Image 1 (cartoon, one colour):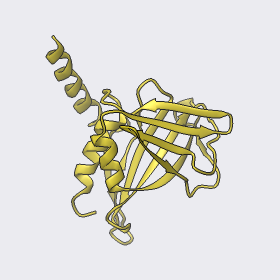
Image 2: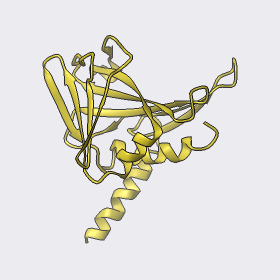
Image 3: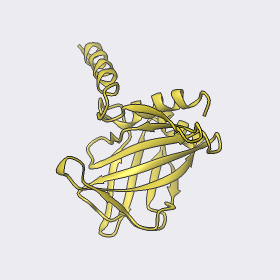
Image 4: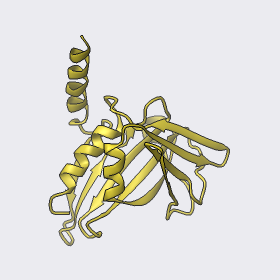
Length: 170
C-alpha cells in the first residue's frame, strides 16, 4: 500500500508539473532580439506553508548563477537584509535580496508578495539532495517557515527537474 501511494505521488507530480500554470511547470523562452534563452519554473509550494519558491536561469548569466524567487501568500512585506534562510540537514545558509523593496502581484484575485535572490547551482543541488530542509523568510512582522519536501505540487521535485534541464546550454 505504501509503495502504491509513493507511485501515485510521482504520477501526480509528473502530471501537475507538466501543465502550464501549475506549480513546478517549467517553460523556456528565446528572445527575438538577441537569442537569449531563459528557463522559468512556476512557483512550487513548501509543505504546510504559505510560501512558494520559483527558479529562473538565463543563458547570459554565469553558468553557476540562478535566480530564486520567494512568493508569499497574502501580500506580506519581506525584510531587506538577510531575509531568506535555509537549514539543510543542520547547516544554515542566509541570503539577501538585490531587491530593495518587496514586489506585489495579484494573479487570479489573490495577493502575493515576492523577492528574488541570486544563488549558486551548488547550493540548489544541496537543498535538492538534503533530507531535512527548512526554509524561513523574515518579514516586517516576524517570519514564515516551510519544509522543502517531495509533496506533489512542491518546489523540491520541480527544482530537481529544473536543474536537469538547465544543465544543458545554459
